[in-house]
Image (cartoon, rainbow, N blue to C red; front, side):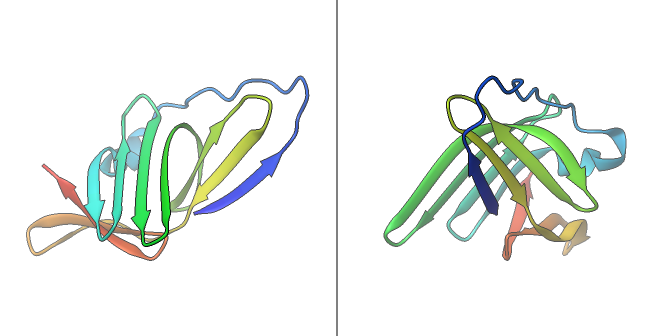
Length: 110
């Protein structure tokens, strides 16, 4: 995940974009080593990463897709833009749906 922070006074609020039909396979609850990711069809994203000495948990909104990768945002006094780098988009493997985000292989809970 690539994070950019910026102070944007008076910036428009990021609004969640619904997941487009072409990316419907991204919707669901995904888990992997030290990572949880939930993407709702309405564009809400819940992300949790728990690594030794570093813990992150955010609720953000989908702001778009860049190829297979997707972006999320959060507004307030400090705007946060995040790109989730997807190197393997959702695909079937061993009867389960998997994708690789930020170098972590995730499996979707059905």
